[in-house]
Image 1 (spheres, protein in one colour):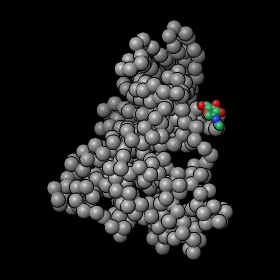
Image 2 (cartoon, protein in one colour):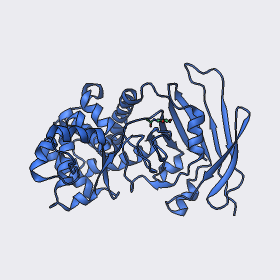
Image 3 (tube, helix red, strand yellow):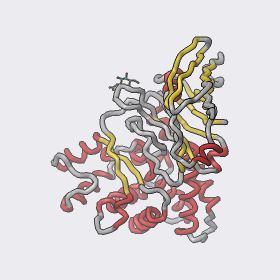
Length: 363
Ligand SMILES: *[C@@H]1O[C@H](CO)[C@@H](O)[C@H](O)[C@H]1NC(C)=O
């Protein structure tokens, strides 16, 4: 059996700066096993490339229905950083397993991640923060710490994925350690007598390694967000992670990202309607291996929409119990609306000078 895997990449006209169309094409005739070699033409110049394309981890049926045959790479915004050829080369040398967006965790938008992942602003915690803010807005009341912790606990019990994810980084850990004056703190299971001091530091922007919630707390007015609600959520997250008497701590993941940032582009991941219907999204690696490799911010635009449908169902049915006119549909519309504001705001703050690309997985 022959499998065809075509990657076609093209720049569309950028409204401001591009007046000449550049077209990149990569076609692959035959795939044998999981590797293939191909040639690629960029503005008439032929390049050789090799691709390791192992089959998606998701079920075969989904793989067939939602297999991308084309990736259209579009430059949305110019900037200082990775060129479209570099991004194209990165994509041409990757494989993209499709996974269930409902049964997978979303990790932070961070170019230091070196595994195939799905990316959302603030990872799972960031999307939950967005939902809390939308919920407060819809009921017209401020939530207190106890409610926030209860909702988070219930959500973690209810969610379909194995882990509820958030990230820290070396810099934030160093800040907390130097403020406390203790080196080598255990952030997933600290000493009881240090917990409350650590919590006060971990809700401070300097103690946050996730660029999204860090900036949201620093500039809450730009996000139209109530910072107290987000701080309640961060506290609740750590309290649940550290509470060994509550068995849900085993479903909470904290990733500590090493080293410093070196992202040179923003890459938005979109896919065809079939993938959306099947609730799957392709995994993408923000940085292949070592620190000197190309590092990009990867955000799964369509994958996040799938996850929001599920978070909205949770809030409408489990929390609001369909009261106050809260339906899943209204909730998800609000989440998407406010989520787009978050995306623009964080994108501008953390990647304002970088080029923005969209990789669209198509048939
Ligand atoms: C940053 O990334 C570039 C490649 O995009 C690499 O050449 C450079 O060595 C990296 N810098 C550091 C400090 O790792």
